[in-house]
Length: 356
Ligand code: GDD
Ligand code: MG
Image (spheres, rainbow, N blue to C red):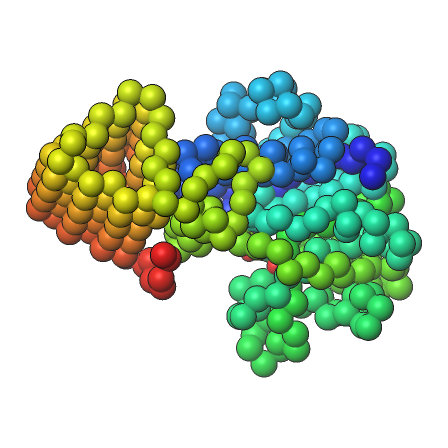
């Protein structure tokens, strides 16, 4: 496979992770204590992507300051910053100056292990102008449904269908291979979407648009439940990150200067960030991720949780199936179950399902 360039769509779009994404772009939320986007960059790097363009609009400086020119990530990074959100296709049009041969586009909130090298071979083999990575989901209504014929050619694209419109469970996985010439159909400096604009237009024009089905891992982490699930799936080895070395199913990975009292119990899988302190008789049962500088009080019970950095858990607290934002403090003996809590205590109790 020749060297590819990639555009990652890193829009605001954080409303569904509310309230966690008020102060931090969705792409920077910690997954196993590393920004989500870092996992994505490592994934692309595995496919010898030689240049990544981050299409940004919301809090761009947070991302630019963290990643810089990409030298720490091992892939050169460029930025295409929008003054106003240009939509998914408009954001790529805004990066057009970098794109002169077949390139990859990735939704910035998708975690997948879809085989890009194989997808490129498929794209070339079909002579496609656009190839859409497809994944199978139980309920396609929150996604873009993609109907293909027996040769894989896309017949119809329906974004966010009503249940009655669903004709297949294969959906757009948010990974595209595109030829640069398709961008001629995208108006510059205008809000324009792939999903409702460019893809339907290419179909109307009779251009070869193909769907590449994949049965690998796929998750859109843009809701609190899915964000929690992604952390758990990685710890439970249901998904693998190109960024993180080997984890073990029962393992407890501690960063430096972690103090765990001998009477505390930590059952993996768990990742504990630097300078955490775990007090006597606290009980932590994975899958759990604890950010740096957290304090877990005496007799606290934590099960299936993601704690960002600087979280302070009082004595006797019970946490189950929850996400705690940076610097959140939970008072002694409180119970937090199926909830997102942030330091300002805006609480969203909407994490349902089973994660372990
Ligand atoms: N730069 C930039 N500018 N990025 C944007 C903009 C924009 O104006 N609008 C959206 N994005 C980014 C979002 O940040 C996200 O990373 C990606 O584009 C997709 O937007 P979402 O808002 O997360 O869309 P969705 O999840 O409802 O649906 C999309 O993804 C599904 C797969 O997860 C669609 O592409 C569906 O068809 C698809 O099935
Ligand atoms: Mg999304």
